[in-house]
Length: 392
Ligand SMILES: C[S@@+](CC[C@H](N)C(=O)[O-])C[C@H]1O[C@@H](n2cnc3c(N)ncnc32)[C@H](O)[C@@H]1O
Image 1 (cartoon, rainbow, N blue to C red):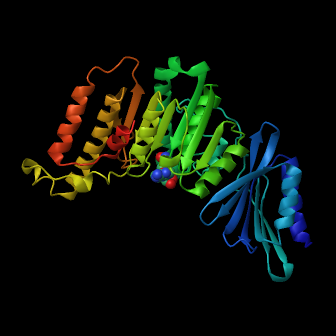
Image 2 (cartoon, rainbow, N blue to C red; image 1 turned 45 degrees about the vertical axis):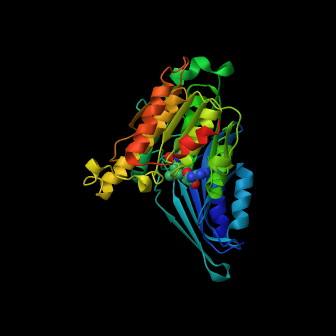
Image 3 (cartoon, protein in one colour; image 1 turned 120 degrees about the vertical axis):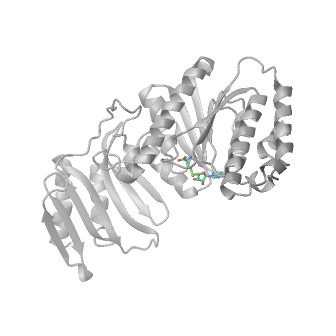
């Protein structure tokens, strides 16, 4: 092996033993997998001690795996010069840039360290947030930098995550007396990249110390694979991600069902499943409102208002989420609709939180009359949640 490649691997190994390692990036991939682009290696604290977390970045998805130091160094040795032709090692002493050219010739540049301190691996919480910005999954999912700072572009997402955890903490306070053996079961429908799913698990398991299981469900296989690999790397037992459609995902029991920004009527599918299984709380932030908008036949008195697309859009949103809240009330929940986070952070900002009532709702008939009156006023024929609830 070329002596510069050997020296680079030695420096990598040495940084691990001297505790100066910050991160390693392998790039310029020329291997057989047409989708793999680079590998990013960081440290992670696990129950078995410090491990190397390898994040494999593909063009459309990411996946991750942990290795102990010996395995990690051996793997990098195996990959450099065969699959990857560029290595960038960051230590608190120096940066090392390795470029391997044709015929195996390699150049090694040694520069001043970009990072003078090691990234924090601790899970200390900042006073301002309920979850720690140093949590490893936030780094792996791209919210924080290696130093545990929130990336500029992710500030809004971070605000959203924190606001969401605050809401969930409040929901938990309202239902905790009803839990079976203090066990909490959460399902996140349309979990996407899992930011909120991880944060929910982290808050209940690691901050409150509750026996919680959390399942994220999503139609995108790549995201499910990434989230499962990060959950495994973090040793988050009880957190799993399942590939599938919300409408097809069957479960017996759930305490809190979440569906944030699941597209169009996927929110209705999620609410229906929650009601059917007797969920104690339902937290949804609907996304697009495509079902109702084309059905609205503007009443005569509103016709010159609803001729404006933006007004029709907002009305469709109000009617859709208003009907959902009423249907939840009709089915034994106390529902609240409020602004999740101000529109400057996300345009999709209605949130519906529904808590199962302990006493029977006496006004079911009245609520149903209201629902029918609203539908008839706007000429609405179908609302998916209502249709699904008719099958119960
Ligand atoms: C806008 S993302 C939101 C992700 C996450 N809930 C959040 O708020 O950060 C919507 C996600 O819902 C998933 N999704 C939409 N409709 C779905 C369905 N019917 N079944 C499963 N997943 C669905 C999409 O694949 C996508 O990952």
